Image (cartoon, rainbow, N blue to C red; front, side, top):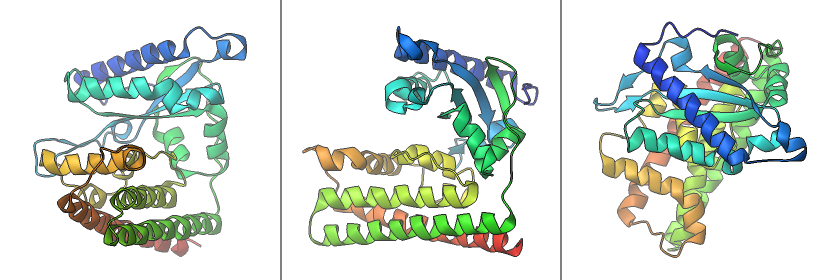
Length: 304
């Protein structure tokens, strides 16, 4: 696996050093003083993938689109328990967000996923594009040893099409169902359920496009996290959510919070204006996801 970062400016390399430091500090703190098998738990690799690995990053925070690429990181650990994001990685994610959005010590947002080495190698063995791209283009920022990932085993064209079509049928159908449930709940003034189902429609649309394009998605309910992953696939997905006004981005973040707060908080509310805006955006997201997935499926079918 590649290890050099010569294609990145010095300031970006310094930022990555800071990110790695934070990840290890917060992991060590979350890991505590374990005993038994957990005592041997450790980080095996941290791999940079995506636009900063390939040299295709975008940094235009001051434009109308207001988009900037993230540092995309895969953290590989040696025990399944250590992949629990809430237990071991939530504080790291919060600290990285704070360093980026509040303290401005990091100028580049950070997006990371955590898997065991077995999960990564299984993904390669099953020909999942996401892990194959990381194995081919990723850059190791940290390695406990120099062991290589397993050799990928790509799917046949027929297998690739069948898998992508199955994911599309499942998750796009579920997204449509959530959108219909939202409309019913909103029409009947069941506003907490309306907000929750609108969030579910968004979440499922991101699952759909990630699975169709990469055969992988982290099954997270954090739609901001899912949006970051999905927007690497097409600029059309970036354009769905305006970022040039704080008010509009705040509405998206409120939709993100609806997964928990709409069900469990007596204080959570959405205005008619917020419902209208978010509903329109989810409809647009659905149209874009459908268009991109149909194009991808046609491309896969043409290779059979």
